[in-house]
Length: 246
Image 1 (cartoon, rainbow, N blue to C red):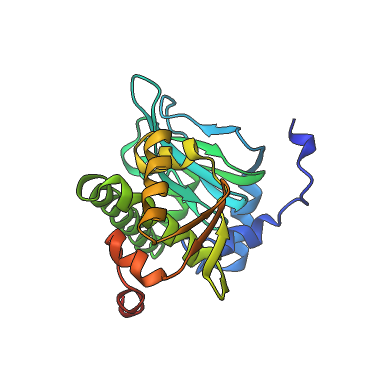
Image 2: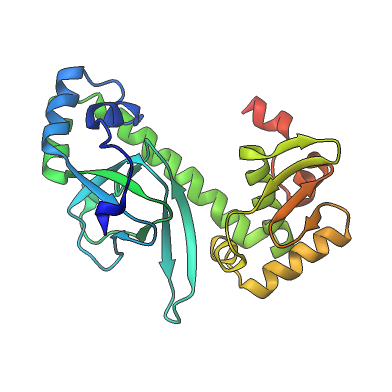
């Protein structure tokens, strides 16, 4: 299956250097770490690791896109985050051991570099400044998780859908005379999984946002946002000015 992955072998040293966790390490250290790290390729839908597995190492995303999910007893998923090139996964168990916190699945053909925890701990002992980078990464994870909790606890589903559309628009919408235009790449069930709800509620929320004039639906996937700041305000997300200040 992995032979169908058409991308070139990523340069492991450059991939490690792109990760903020390792970006300040000397070149020769990165080269040694790259030698020790194992490259793993995944196709869309492949599982990198499961929340039921004992954690054995961390992973640096060299290319692609992966999502972290938790499942309840009925198989319903909640997406915790999405990771792209340069992200570091499974950092927390470095210090407390145990199992992986979530299940991570590839959403696109991806490549990751696996680094054994003992190799990483040894690196921290030799380069103590790396621990400050670890603290920064863990602080970002706490902030991200706090935002997810706030969204699930304090916003209704329409607001969560609106916030999701704002985030996609900020990332890749194209400006037009009608507003900001983009195509949804995720299905309704996939969006529901990210927002802690079900497909029917996502579809109903999109229709109501359309009725409010906050978005224009064209077919199943094409979205136009006439006034991005109005949708941002409705969602409860920070304004563009607030984001700039931060």
